[in-house]
Structures are given as structure tokens and as C-alpha cells.
Length: 144
Image: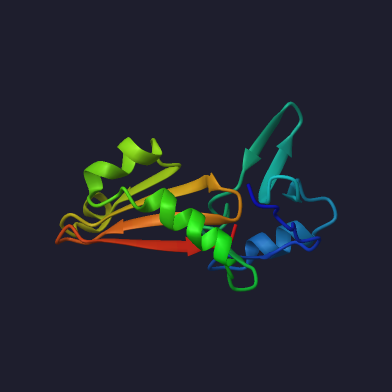
């Protein structure tokens, strides 16, 4: 497995209203950035809550890191890992259940558009597999 260089800096977190950044900068706010798990969270005593949506405006939390640059070894690993996937029926059989699944038909009434997201498939990227309404697959890699 490849070594992962973890950033010592917190990524800028974006939402529609800017509330996430205001909260994380406030001294008494329970919202913190967890460097070990690379996520924003609220510590609630004996429980920890990962923040995926802004509590003020409800928009999905988005992170801004430098652009993802994969090494040749990482590209080869991803290519080998995803080579057996030729259709949507192959995805979960080869990779297991996704960390997040979006069926755009359910939310936007777009026929047969789906996204499978894997946050822990490899330690250096989020892997998104997108299926368009004609059954064609595309693969997207984004920084963690």
C-alpha cells in the first residue's frame, strides 16, 4: 500500500451560507476538524457526529484542497481495482456496498442516473462511479 502524506492544515470547508467556516473558527464552538480522520465533527461528550450538511443552510459540506494528483503507482492501482467493472451490476459485487449511493431519479426525477461513492476504497482518494441514463459508467477521483 502507498504512503499517504497528511496535510497539517485544515481544508477550507464550504457551504452556501458560510456558516461552517464561522463555526469552526469560533472559540467556543463544538465544531472541530479531526485531522486523524480528515473530517469535520461535533464532539458531544460520549458521542461524535460527523458533519456532512451545514446545520444553518442544509447544503452539503464541500472541502477545498489542492487538486488531486495521482502517482503512476496510484493510477495503476486504481486501474487494476476498477478493471473488472463494466456495468452497474458489477460495482457492488466487485467493491462491496458503497459508502454513499445517490439515485438522482429519487431526488431530481432524472431517469436512471446513479452515483456510487467509496470513501475508504483507497487511502488517497474518494472514488465516485457515475452511471448516466444510458448505462454508461464514468469514474471520478477526488481528494479526501
